[in-house]
Image (tube, rainbow, N blue to C red; front, side, top):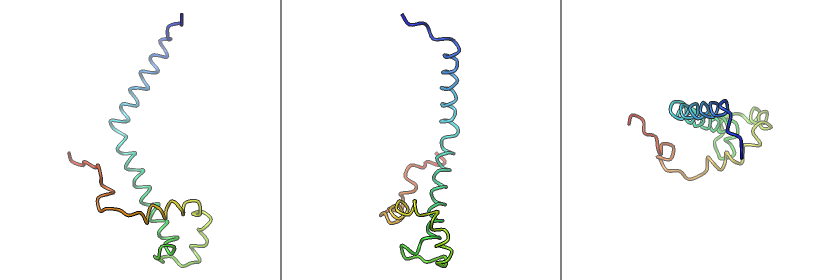
Length: 99
């Protein structure tokens, strides 16, 4: 026979469940929006620094070369994300603002 769970464990599990429910109810959309905003700002930064790789020279090469060691790990995924074929509505698939 296994011992009964301690009441403290049951209370802790209940509080965790309530906290996760409230996060899903109030904070999930905000955190998801923050992740989307970070991705778009990162994409713009990469475009400004190494955009000449896809034919959009914005910064002089001197500054791009100074920033190159910091962006090398992200170049392959950035090029794949930017050069992927997209539809006009790809970024706004399931946003139901106002409903």
